[in-house]
Length: 299
Ligand code: FUB
Image 1 (tube, rainbow, N blue to C red):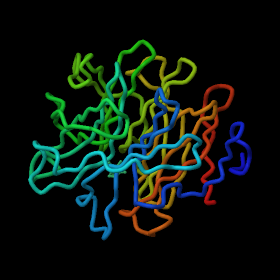
Image 2 (image 1 turned 90 degrees about the vertical axis):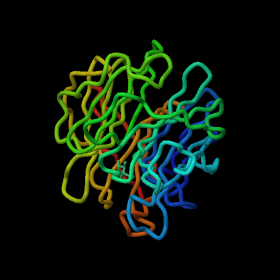
Image 3 (image 1 turned 135 degrees about the horizontal axis):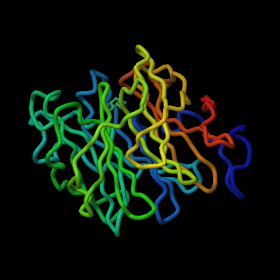
Image 4 (image 1 turned 120 degrees about the horizontal axis):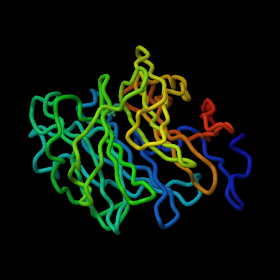
């Protein structure tokens, strides 16, 4: 489908990729909330690009039409996290969930100077989707490997599930009603092939989809698996996003006004893997529920 085609009545998808050009942004987690708008919760790559250590804050963007994006501003930075590493930085890929009038913002952040051994998943809450977030501490009892890239699915029955992982291990578990503690512990997500990081779970037509980036050297792709249960076991289904030209790949999938979209990042503006930009493209399904390869449009 061409981006010039009419998306919904009165709304044309005419923006170019990258879609967010005012800041360097990465790791987009997109959600459509009750106000009908689509929101992107993104990491903020910092210029000059030294490395992922410099990433110390998050921005939110919103849109009513998937074309015109409003920068809602910064919602959290490392200096606002009392338990975080003294040097700050390392605010990596986040996600947000909504339940019973509260927005829960989940973000990976180290608690100590030895950053790679002290990852935690922090939770900030607000009654607004894009402002007023206050850190509430980190989820207790987790550890042992890379606690990065959290993703939370609130299912149709109100039960909430968290997923995260980096390296080669992805774990999932149910959250308690407080959305800040784990109910029965985390378990490894079984059935994924070549998992690297960037877990994202969504549900369509009663089927759960777990998408993630793989280990293709220096140029990850996005793969996916499906299950009839939120915590698997998963059936591997294939690759649906080919390399973007960036050394990291991270994305989310969301339905907006009847069309599904893929949010991801590339480095087309900067040419540097630590200065990334959020992109958006259509994502389509086959009749059997498999995902068609996403066409990465450039303009
Ligand atoms: O943005 C920092 C890290 O790079 C994320 O946590 C990973 O998923 C990768 O995109």
